Image (cartoon, rainbow, N blue to C red):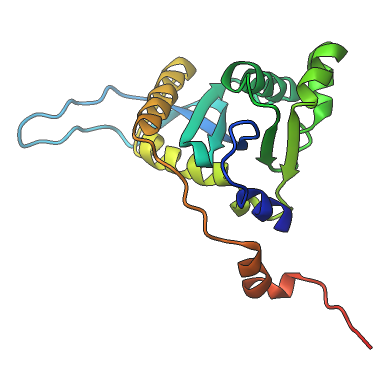
Length: 210
């Protein structure tokens, strides 16, 4: 916990950007019956029944101090999918950064081994050398700023909507990312290591001194 909090205290440095990432499954939902469009004096009407069209994976990357985030949609969230996302982040989004400081949970796919399982050894080594991973603790996902941003995405883009297929969801996620970045929405993180030592004192081991 303190390791992640200390990472958040670092000043903005484009050579060593702090990036938070998280994933979540998203259910594709289709209509059973055609909706009745709204008209003057009558709201849109739709049936309470719906059709489950399977689920997909949403990947969120956020640079808190850079006012940047990107939500992308994949059919799956395997180690290869994660590796390709990391490669794109390093090679296309931050090609000039010396090293990316990545904050994420300790899911078994979030490791350098996923790069080696996906790319040839030379490329995997090149990518891993530019990656410094800091894991949130177990039951500490609230420390991940990307999880907070996922909640915003869910409320702003998905709540109250039925999106039936992946291509539509990809377009909606891209549109949301572009709009939110254009508005230059930043992250104002206040919780510090000192706060943790006071408010979460019970989580620290007791040390007896004689």
